[in-house]
Image: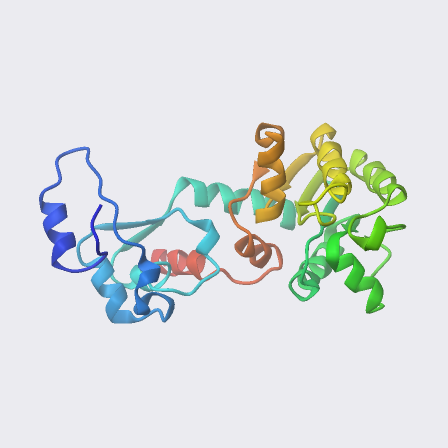
Length: 260
């Protein structure tokens, strides 16, 4: 480990490396130039290296020095994991097998609305739960008939109710592609985890191509040790939402521009 990510200490550590060894540099976010995408900082990051490999999909929605700026000074490539992310996310958003179902939960409806609108174009169903379902009902947001809001709720609207669970499970069972982002309720507290766990169980039992992403959804997977039951688990939370919403990913675009 080198207690810096630029400068002479990095150069010395590289000179001392033996064949087959690697070094870990200091966290780039400790440096002011990172989030500002400062060109001088990006140049310093690149000066000790021959090749830059971006394998961090989770930061590709950020226009920062170690994500985009560095590609101006060193040859850049997409890592194998980043390629897998793009391949699988492209599969579910551009040409999904029909019928396709998106399950959208969690909070902050303003971040999920663009995603719901995008899914409405090609998906048969968009199942909405969690706090965003409460907000959609309270704000009387008008959706197309493809969007399925909860039929009932648990106490204090902290989870979807039994009628909703059954309806969602019926739709999931008929789906060929399933994308899930966000819990159905306050899953950290019992009994408000019932809806989220029921939906996860239905996804696992499905024969569909399944893709899950987002910190809370992945947390539920981890708690139930079900990673191997899902076709693809995305490492991106905000990055996955940005990509599926159709927004440009600066980290990916920087690599494409470099190739041109």
